[in-house]
Length: 264
Length: 264
Image (tube, rainbow over all chains, first blue to last red; front, side, top):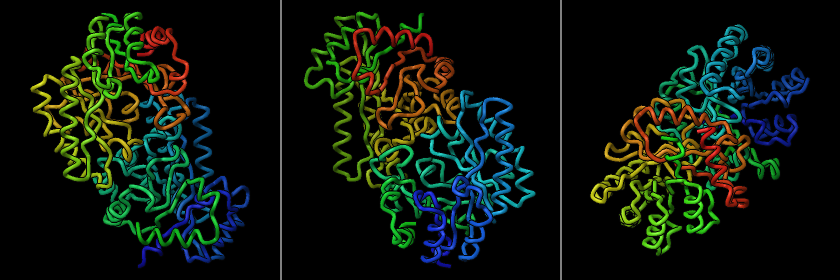
């Protein structure tokens, strides 16, 4: 199987595009998977889902659930309810995976926030199982610890809950001295693999990602390590890059396929 | 002993000030230690050293050596030679510690770069020992992995070389799920403790630090963990913050003392 048959295009790579254009471009380029974000669906899940099927695409994952680390009981209940909605949405889209971003400390200590994340996760895991959706815990880079995720290493994600999956995004984990052993440890639980690159210098914290090959991440080494665990599912290209947002044209997905083949 | 007697003012906190002003302000505020940077000394080490002594201050550390991860043998020799100069400079300033920042991968793989760091460190350790200077390995935050330091966790610093010390900077290590156990593991090897804070949102990668109390780092918890290992040496305030650079006045060091007492 050509690696290209595992390529998934995460729609946030072309944030300014309506989802219809993303779907059409994937179809035209022969990209088999699409990574979908909840806030892009509005109320049109059924319509989007039908269009994806009509174009012969599959959804690799829905982004995102989680954000469990709320500081009050009431807020936590709201988060759990919201995750149940997200699980339903993933199921109705045919997304096998709901990406879970844990959330920041929100005024709690790191220890308390991390315990809260586990509590929330355990509460919704049965719902996910019933819906046939894997919760894919995505550790974020430690530079997001204060604002987005108290789960910052693959080791933590692996430690969290045996019944959950993990999502390995190279941008978030490449720096970790333990990344190879933690990928091996995630054998059988890898629910997603995301690629982009880390440019030097990094232009910003949120919008710093680059096209594969335009940075320093050892992409092929990481991809091979993930494959060696037996994972042969979709590989999502998820690049947050303002220049790509501003200049994306209909040739972008072909260029992404080329970079994917030469660097991933 | 009051905690204030352990305060060291790292001169980069007021980068625009000439070192004479830093020394005078420390003396006026009764701050006992100063953290010195090599590029601020120019050729005037003896003069600066005499002024520091005359004002009754002590140097807590000299910043910095390291940057071992050069990609060619010739470059590596240059780095080793430069580290020997830095060790001499630390000794002549009376600085007990030379802060070591490992350097980025520089086109090498992370594994190769990390091995190179260890090689360089082992090569200069005997010189440091002879000069009575501790090499304090400072792990940097993973967001600097590509540009400054392939050593990104306290675990790595602890693993590197038994004969070397480690420098714990809260800004670099606070996010780490293993930070408490690695601080405990560093017992007897802690060569420095640096404080600042992590503001939300982080205004930038290089200049993102905040005054203690203006961010989310659990400062007191980390300070107590460091103290619990038996470390009772200087605690350096090292804040890279453009607003502080632009607005620093002669009251700044008093405000730092207050924040130090209330938050560290």
